[in-house]
Figure (tube, rainbow, N blue to C red):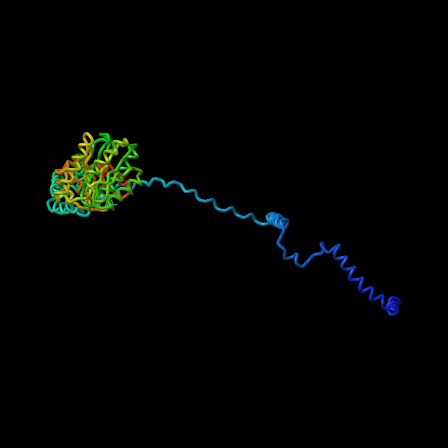
Amino acid sequence: MESLIQLIEETPELLLLGSLVLPLFLTLLIVVFGSEAPSPLDEEAEPTHETSVEAPAAEAEAASELADVAEPEPLPEPEPVVAPEPPRPRARLADRLRRTSEALVGQIEGVLGGRTVDNDLLDDLEALLFGADLGVGTAEGLLQAVRKEAAGGDAAAVRAVLRNAICERLATVEGAGDPFATRGTPHVVLVLGVNGSGKTTTIGKLAARFQESGKTVILGAGDTFRAAAIEQLQVWGERVGCEVVASQEGGDPAAVAFDTLKAAKARGRDVAIIDTAGRLQTKEPLMEELKKIHRVIGREVDGAPHEVLLVLDGNTGQNAISQARVFTEATGVTGLVVTKLDGTAKGGVIVGLADELHIPVRFIGVGEAIEDLREFRAQEFVDALFDEGGATG
Ligand SMILES: Nc1nc2c(ncn2[C@@H]2O[C@H](COP(=O)(O)OP(=O)(O)OP(=O)(O)O)[C@@H](O)[C@H]2O)c(=O)[nH]1
Ligand SMILES: [Mg+2]
């Protein structure tokens, strides 16, 4: 090393030469090996295809290792399968008739207490029967039966006599045969009643029931008074899956009835049900309009209308009897539907209707759903009213 320093001191040209050659030598090295040398810029470069493939592979490997030791992830809960809504179980008739039942029979024990049937007691019983909206004549008739058959008897004897007497009266208005049997082509049902009695709702329920029994149905929106009434029937049509024939608001209801029957014939529908506007039985022009609808229907289909259903709101009590009288005179009502028996204590009116008018009660309405339209069966109705032995149905 000393001799190298001495040599440089003696020949300074050598240092100059070395300072020129060394950079050249270094440059040559960079040219030859530089491309393989890592560059600080390389770290910021976009990942290449190669790296993007490798990374997940590495991750997957790591994950699979973890999986060997970690608790397995719980599987996600399976999506609940949406099952079609099961048909709703029909409510017990006794539950739906609870308020009328309480008004009519529920208080008998309270009225009688430990007493037996005598004149004083008959006065109390009379008040009870009037409270259930049976009507004067019917209440009198029932009291007469109690006087004759339960004199000296107790509460159980009175119940038994009332039960039999009511059942006898109701049996006279039980419609004969299948209410969904058809008698024409199409079978035409005209539906009448005062405002809000439940006509349109009853038509919707009826259409559903006819269709369930395998019949095809067409509806006629003969209540042209309000656009909302037409829409209400159309909603039922959609719900039930049947066609609705309708005109503009304010159209002629007889023309709608005519169009409905034409459509029913053209399309081979089994049943045509015609809605009408609610009308007070005291309004003469409106009753005349009903007669016109009735005539038009009769001209279009032989023997039609095969059924003229008068819909009565059970809440109206005794007024239902006067409504039934006037509508029957105007249009020859063939059957009654008594609705809203689920929400009233005045359901006893059905006994009064039977007693005074003798028009068959085809159906009763005990709620707003399709299954709440029940065929009227006297025995079943009385069992529900007296609710002994857990009447069902
Ligand atoms: N709780 C109960 N409600 C009922 C029953 N029948 C009908 N309704 C309800 O009574 C109301 C009137 O029924 P609608 O069918 O519109 O009566 P409507 O006779 O067609 O009435 P208008 O066309 O206005 O004359 C509606 O809210 C129905 O849901 C029933 O049996 N029970
Ligand atoms: Mg209506």
